[in-house]
Image (cartoon, rainbow, N blue to C red):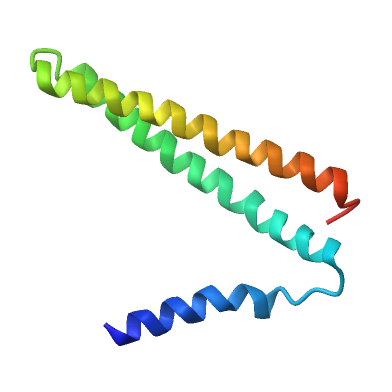
Length: 102
Protein backbone atom coordinates (compact mmCIF):
# COMPACT_ATOMS: atom_id res chain seq x y z
CA UNK A 1 0.00 0.00 0.00
CA UNK A 2 2.87 2.34 0.79
CA UNK A 3 4.40 1.81 -2.66
CA UNK A 4 1.16 2.92 -4.35
CA UNK A 5 1.14 6.11 -2.31
CA UNK A 6 4.77 6.81 -3.22
CA UNK A 7 4.11 6.19 -6.92
CA UNK A 8 1.03 8.43 -6.81
CA UNK A 9 2.96 11.28 -5.18
CA UNK A 10 5.82 10.88 -7.66
CA UNK A 11 3.43 11.02 -10.60
CA UNK A 12 1.65 14.03 -9.13
CA UNK A 13 4.92 15.94 -8.73
CA UNK A 14 6.45 14.81 -12.04
CA UNK A 15 4.71 17.37 -14.27
CA UNK A 16 6.08 20.28 -12.26
CA UNK A 17 9.60 18.90 -12.67
CA UNK A 18 9.28 17.88 -16.32
CA UNK A 19 7.43 21.01 -17.40
CA UNK A 20 9.86 23.46 -15.83
CA UNK A 21 9.06 26.63 -17.73
CA UNK A 22 10.81 29.93 -18.29
CA UNK A 23 7.71 32.11 -18.36
CA UNK A 24 4.11 31.88 -17.26
CA UNK A 25 3.00 31.81 -20.89
CA UNK A 26 5.14 28.79 -21.70
CA UNK A 27 3.86 27.01 -18.59
CA UNK A 28 0.28 27.65 -19.69
CA UNK A 29 1.20 26.52 -23.20
CA UNK A 30 2.58 23.24 -21.94
CA UNK A 31 -0.49 22.66 -19.78
CA UNK A 32 -2.74 23.33 -22.78
CA UNK A 33 -0.69 20.87 -24.82
CA UNK A 34 -1.27 18.18 -22.20
CA UNK A 35 -4.99 19.02 -22.10
CA UNK A 36 -5.17 18.88 -25.90
CA UNK A 37 -3.91 15.30 -25.73
CA UNK A 38 -5.97 14.21 -22.71
CA UNK A 39 -9.37 15.58 -23.76
CA UNK A 40 -9.75 13.50 -26.96
CA UNK A 41 -8.77 10.37 -25.04
CA UNK A 42 -11.27 11.15 -22.30
CA UNK A 43 -13.92 12.06 -24.86
CA UNK A 44 -13.35 8.77 -26.68
CA UNK A 45 -13.76 6.84 -23.44
CA UNK A 46 -16.99 8.67 -22.62
CA UNK A 47 -18.26 8.08 -26.16
CA UNK A 48 -17.48 4.37 -25.82
CA UNK A 49 -19.42 4.20 -22.54
CA UNK A 50 -22.29 6.11 -24.17
CA UNK A 51 -22.43 3.68 -27.09
CA UNK A 52 -22.20 0.67 -24.75
CA UNK A 53 -25.14 1.94 -22.69
CA UNK A 54 -27.09 2.71 -25.86
CA UNK A 55 -26.66 -0.90 -26.95
CA UNK A 56 -27.71 -2.12 -23.49
CA UNK A 57 -30.80 0.08 -23.70
CA UNK A 58 -31.75 -1.32 -27.09
CA UNK A 59 -31.16 -4.97 -26.16
CA UNK A 60 -33.03 -4.72 -22.84
CA UNK A 61 -36.31 -3.62 -24.39
CA UNK A 62 -38.28 -6.23 -22.44
CA UNK A 63 -36.80 -5.37 -19.00
CA UNK A 64 -38.27 -2.12 -17.68
CA UNK A 65 -35.73 -1.73 -14.85
CA UNK A 66 -32.69 -2.17 -17.13
CA UNK A 67 -34.27 0.09 -19.73
CA UNK A 68 -34.69 2.89 -17.17
CA UNK A 69 -31.12 2.45 -15.95
CA UNK A 70 -29.83 2.50 -19.51
CA UNK A 71 -31.77 5.67 -20.27
CA UNK A 72 -30.26 7.40 -17.22
CA UNK A 73 -26.73 6.34 -18.18
CA UNK A 74 -27.25 7.52 -21.76
CA UNK A 75 -28.29 10.91 -20.39
CA UNK A 76 -25.21 11.11 -18.20
CA UNK A 77 -23.07 10.15 -21.19
CA UNK A 78 -24.47 13.05 -23.19
CA UNK A 79 -23.84 15.40 -20.27
CA UNK A 80 -20.29 14.05 -19.92
CA UNK A 81 -19.54 14.56 -23.62
CA UNK A 82 -20.91 18.10 -23.46
CA UNK A 83 -18.84 18.97 -20.39
CA UNK A 84 -15.60 17.48 -21.74
CA UNK A 85 -15.75 19.13 -25.13
CA UNK A 86 -16.99 22.43 -23.69
CA UNK A 87 -14.05 22.42 -21.31
CA UNK A 88 -11.73 21.74 -24.23
CA UNK A 89 -13.14 24.72 -26.13
CA UNK A 90 -12.97 27.04 -23.12
CA UNK A 91 -9.36 26.08 -22.37
CA UNK A 92 -8.34 26.72 -25.98
CA UNK A 93 -10.15 30.06 -26.13
CA UNK A 94 -8.48 31.21 -22.92
CA UNK A 95 -5.09 29.92 -24.08
CA UNK A 96 -5.38 31.62 -27.45
CA UNK A 97 -6.48 34.85 -25.78
CA UNK A 98 -3.71 35.09 -23.18
CA UNK A 99 -0.91 33.04 -24.72
CA UNK A 100 0.21 33.93 -28.22
CA UNK A 101 1.84 30.60 -29.06
CA UNK A 102 2.34 27.35 -27.26
